Image (cartoon, rainbow, N blue to C red; front, side, top):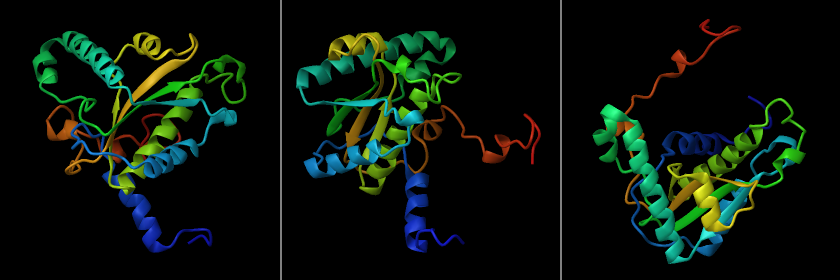
Length: 216
């Protein structure tokens, strides 16, 4: 055991947060105290980022009209997604895919403008800005779970339309709508697994050694 390791109780708490994190769709209203929201956002801001570019930008949605408009964009994309799914369209439409109207806090996360000037770590992998943003969202997700709050990542929207609605610069890009707030309970397993939409694959099917497809 490394001398830098956390205590057994602290390690258990970290692994519990990871194991019990869920992409939540059902919220029970309520509020998130300002100091708690600040703490969660600071946890997100502590995420690693390629070249220390910190590409994430958080927009807190407090205007009711904006929340309604964002819900409308998501609903429009939900229907377009159902059409693209063909045989599974009806099954998809029965899924609850967002909690925008019910969550205590609504956040939009966008990639910053001017990303092309950041070369360090992105010359061959420009998508590392998105990977960095995802790390920030994961930090927020885990911190929210530890605080007993649910978080759901909604990706059903047209980025340009959401960007125009929120006044994003042309080279910025809306990447996530995050629903955050109290929940009655957390799902025992991922909701899409509960609903029979998909079955999670075990790690051993996704782990290779030395070369693609070679199992340990």
